[in-house]
Amino acid sequence: MYSEIVMDHFTNPRNVGEIENADAVGQVGNPKCGDIMKMYFKIEDNVIVDVKFKTFGCGSAIASSSMATEMVKGKTVEEALALSNYEVAKELDGLPPAKMHCSLLAEQAIKSAIFDYAQKHNLYYKELEGFDPDADEDHHDHGEEE
Amino acid sequence: MKVYLDYSATTPVKPEVLDAMLPYLKDYYGNPSSLHSFGRENKKAIDTARDQIAKTFNAKPEEIFFTGGGSESDNWAIKGVAAALKTRGRHIITTNIEHHAVLHACQYLEKEGFEVTYLPVDEDGLISVEDLKNSIRKDTILITIMYANNEIGTLQPIEEIAAIAKENKIIFHTDAVQAYGHIKIDTQQLPVDMISISAHKLYGPKGVGALYLRKGTKIHNLIHGGAQERKKRAGTENIAGIVGFGKAAEMAYENLEEHVQHLTELRDYLLDEILDKIPYTKLNGHREKRLINNVNVSFEFIEGESMLLSLDMVGIAASSGSACTSGSLDPSHVLLSLGLSHEMAHGSLRLTLGDQNTKEEIDYVLEQLPPIVQRLRDMSPLYENIKEGVR
Ligand SMILES: Cc1ncc(COP(=O)(O)O)c(C=O)c1O
Image 1 (cartoon, each protein chain N blue to C red):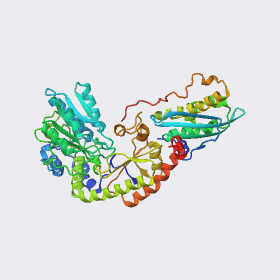
Image 2 (cartoon, chains in turn blue, brown):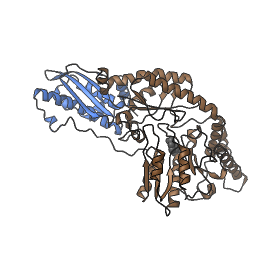
Image 3 (tube, rainbow over the protein chains, first blue to last red):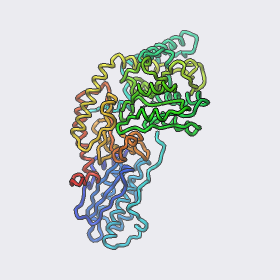
């Protein structure tokens, strides 16, 4: 069901944890859907120098958070904002269709953290226009069960 | 080590059952409806299996009808009685926690103009017999309530339910797919009209089941066609499957006491140790009124699929009521009916035991499970407050 890369990131997730006095913290998802992602950034000179995450969720949610943190580490804030969930899923060697929302959640966790950063520092990012960090994540497929 | 703890999903076929089946896949290929010796041999084999199953119910062989599995038996019982009695009434009573084979059959009938009452359950998964009594109407034609729940193992007060149905002259069906093979069901004692059972839950093959149909019960056919099963269920019989089912049922009830003792001991050990070893854990289902092979617990702050993946990596096969394991949005309807929060329903783990399990295997699970739960909790944002003692 899952690719080897997904299983690797699930088994040995990178960047698990918290950052004390983080420059940015974002959380998305809710327990109702079964996924919550929280991300912590340390930002120096507009560069994300450290990232940590905590995730409540299925294997692909944990793997997506792990991969996404790897992908934004060392990037500028603008570069991190440009990261799409498709790129995360691609780096994971694909996700099952019903699990694509996990990669989207990772993308939104990053945006949510940067939103926090922007608010604290009065910064404006075009990519965050209309972004609502408290929007209920509901991108599951309402598929028929078997 | 490989440990299979998903016996409620399905069981392996016992060697004796396979041995009984093989001749009917190899040598005996005649159609049981044929007049010649090839057919007659197979007719006899089906009759033997019917006798074997009838005996376990203390029923007459003419009251046992073979089907294509538990789902078909449930569908037949419900739709068949609805069709036969629709001029008398259009009200059906069931529960919130039935298997989808019952729930979806009822929902289908609702679209066809029937009315269905779904009885709620308490936090242990039990219906209230008072609720049942109060929901009976003049036009109630069928009560369908499962004997044992497949997820949480809770056993309903079947004797009381059957007595109430009989008193009110309402047909009573029970889905006993999970109970059969663990519990003696005596149809001379229990006034039940229809019972659904399935072979693959008691060490028989998949794709074969049966409906016990008390003599005189009014029901229409679900599968129309040839004259098989005394004109009630058409289709050339799955002979090897039926033979295997008969053998599996016979073996289950020959060794019932030993089986019950073995599994009850293992289940209690596993359950008590989990609750003892892992904090923030809740038992799902009733502690005593419970299937002998069912352990179902929710671990706070973590999600079921990631638990199943982790267990699978160390060779342990289990299941969960988390939405992420079913591909649907909501976690199990059964767990939500108990009043569990979505979070707790997502964090459920079902371990169902079988005859092949040993104490050593259970010890292995008890060794592997706590660190898996802890690892996932350490990764969970919901656990942070707990560690800091906020809650
Ligand atoms: C309670 C219950 N009813 C019905 C079924 C369906 O049986 P089958 O798989 O034979 O169609 C199952 C099996 O999952 C079950 O547990």
